[in-house]
Length: 423
Ligand code: PA5
Image 1 (cartoon, rainbow, N blue to C red):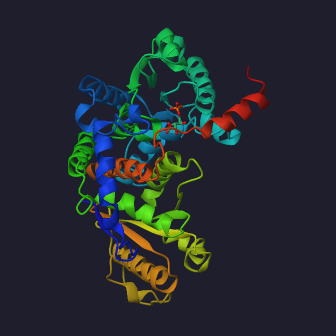
Image 2 (image 1 turned 120 degrees about the horizontal axis):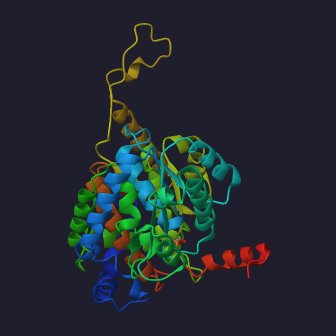
Image 3 (image 1 turned 90 degrees about the horizontal axis):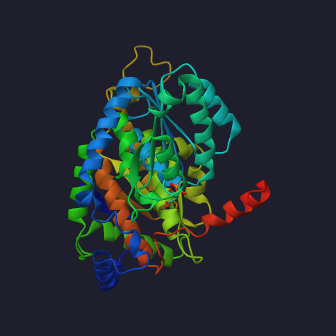
């Protein structure tokens, strides 16, 4: 399903990690490692709450019936996964009636004000998502949305247009939702934000988009079963995890996630959060960066090829694109493009990929790991989400770091609260 090609990355020392990987695998299964109270995602594809899952599907159906616009109000793990899935599976210009917008992920005044302006004549439903319930970006946007809904529909109707996804039992948003009588969905205690796309956090927005969430969970289940063993020789998730560590040991500071489909740009953002927040601690870890080719070959390509040798690339390739067409011939050929006539757009894209691989690896001396998936379907999204969770945990545990906390994120918040006079 997901293939890893290490030919262009020269990870010959991989077998040396087999023993350590087997030890960490044991730690993952027995939940004995650092941050072990946040391993709920590991067997989530079998243990997920079926009643809540049915509620997600029911709510999604109702929202699709009544709303023109569905607003996801959340930040970090509370929105990146659903946005990544929706774009990956449906592309950039989906044929659906309901529009999905994201807010609560920025303090940018023009963004927020424009969004409120854009939705004023639409039928709107809001999903506020925050595990802690206290994230300022999200809480600020939600107050504005709540007041917008109450002014537009009155308090009663507004209430029926808000769904809160938050901690099951505690937190500001939980208390708020209970007092206001909002429909609520829950984030399991043992699953952190960046590991939560397969819970209600991700599944409600994804289902509202009309994507088959059963297929997503089936993909995740198949990945969980496939990578649930300690054998490094055959476990692709662990191989990818180890390759990352080998690259770091060789002196590379950054991993550049490269995709060749525009609809994977948000997947790269999700991947960056997963790896960046999980591993960037104790002055360790690779900087996760991303580019979208061929677009960024015209901006970042030069640096990747010829700049400082600080990075390796991880190509994330799709065998069969969601859509394709044949490039037409032109009788006059004034643009001199007839050499492409009869080829499909995807053939051209794949040749660009091969040419770039050759340039970056052979000429630029940049190592390239290659991950390939068959397509951009819902099933594949679920599969790779679980694949990356497992790979990330293994990779970070190999550094002897807790993959599930994010102590550094608190510092900016404290400073900001001081500057804003929050008591
Ligand atoms: O991975 C994480 O835990 C974080 O990135 C959170 O997802 C992010 O900070 C949002 O937090 P919350 O859902 O509590 O608003």
